[in-house]
Length: 176
Image (tube, rainbow, N blue to C red; front, side, top):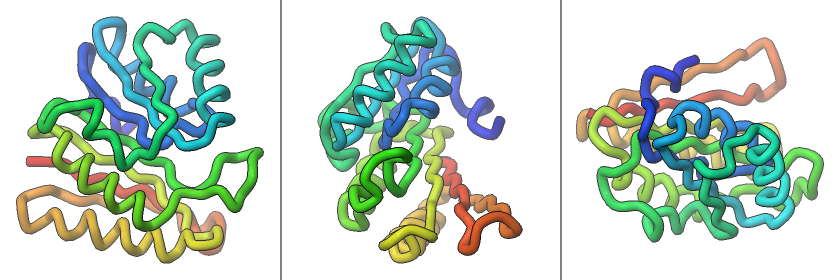
């Protein structure tokens, strides 16, 4: 609902953590036939799962999958060319929970995303502070995005505190 206003037909967008493909499908629907989604994940199981979900939705021609770290996204898109970058941090549901996004790679990917996003684009991050290493990663991501405010980015945080303890939350950073 929130990202729908930021993404338009024909846009280039990035799913930084393809996972099981739910966000990839959403992004592919938003960009329509003339747009493109770059989807990244370091786990073959995630790429297989996401690719299957995208194919079942009939959206395969819009998505380019990359079995590599999201920190490498700048190898596949130019500065100021991306309308939205979406991260869904943590681990791949249904797989090994020890294989989760890591602080160093995630912060590198955030730097890359900030450069790739075009004016009036958006960076979206879902943080999960409840898993091992998740609280540290979530706090660092929040600090990283807050640091963008001095260059005019606007930051919003959404959470449902009555859910899990600690509750997952969504961070949005809009580029001026």
